[in-house]
Image (cartoon, rainbow, N blue to C red; front, side):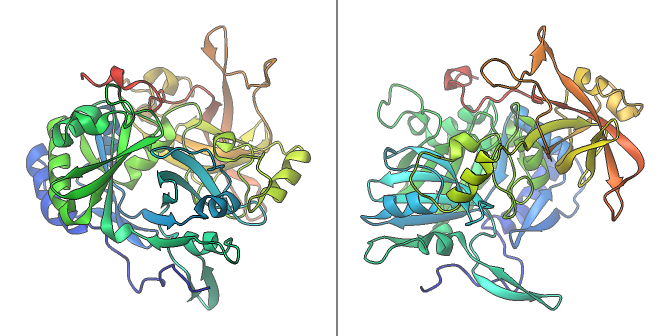
Length: 463
């Protein structure tokens, strides 16, 4: 089979907005906020040079979601799969069931290996009866073998991994269409107002019933000045908002209008640091991150979105056998959110001297309430101040920490008070023994801020 993935890039790639960020947004932000110019803090993410944060701090950018946050997500890849047998192929390669999926609908699904490990998570959009757009994570568009410190490292792009599942004689084709689109996400309570002012209210309406707003996990297509756009509503940050796919020919023009309005509304362009906080901090479970909570060596069983993403009633999909085996054996692992007095990346999680699990994500957050921070029992000044901060994160635990009710659901509160299980986060030596002074925190099911992505748009359409 001919490879459809790209070769490993010789140097870090740049998004379609790289120059706009450096040459237009920095001076604009400097003037808007009255702060001095400095370099954007960047990091290699998926072989792209991505902004961690701009002139504003990660904490400032993470707080923008409370008004409106704009994200340059152009490092993510869009794949077009099409042909008479496309549904059969996707049902075989991915964990979801796409047979009854309607045109205009979105679905969250997973790409596994034969061992049930997570290769990628993604959103599918059904464009027609015989075509789908898959939105996959950065760096998952590379098929190549490279040498790193004397050892060979192999990459297999999602597009090739999926096409390997194609049977002889099936008519289905695939191509990467990322170079034709710019992906910008607009999230937060003022996102409706912003997009309405830029593109008109009609693009936010139900494609089958224009008198009503878009439903959650649907997408629209629209034409503007001769260009074709896609606009999905899948809750990239688990909050109200949209994912916008702009034709590259007008990418910079549209981006300038969107970002300028966001600044006028008290929002910001948000880098990867603020994005990571935003994806963790909404809802009781947050949104797992590929490469952190998810990786090729661990299955998604008992992850918060498992039942949404995986149809175990399907006769077959790649990795199903491994998942069935793990479920039958009664795997106990759980993924939980925690609050801590400081960042605890890669630490072990302990209670009463017993190791409970491992931290997978940890970041400082401006969105933890004063009451929740005081509940840590920290002596740190920044935690206990009224306008202070604490860290939030996620971790895999060996077994459930919360008791279950009669319906088998974990109990999150007693007498309307959230259950918070105190834990300690330790660095560990080469033998995985705790060392040094622990960082204090607790595990909770209450969430940091409410998830709003699924709630009716009538709550924000007139803001």
